[in-house]
Image (tube, helix red, strand yellow):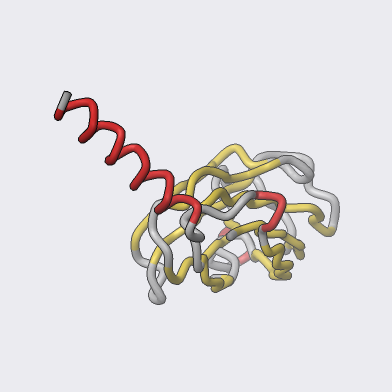
Length: 138
């Protein structure tokens, strides 16, 4: 009988923790829009766009999507999400990102400072590309 009581108590405590602001419903996420430019290595650039900084202040789910790229780019490129104000710890990376589709996404396991970047992952960019990306996060 004591084991059942302990199990019920732990389950109730876990539910209470979750209901006290533990996880943000994705429909309540903040959406941030960032703009940047990638100059490919073939044109003397770094192939890496600027780091876009944002803060995830709660647990929940995030998504990253590159919505536009100008001039129109119809091949794969890279996106990377890093943790820390210095953008040093890789959280997720996708070298097969395409314009208009979700590039990155998943659960937020640690609150704090994050960065997202776009880059010429395949070496296929032949022109400087301007992009717009959105980040939805708790």
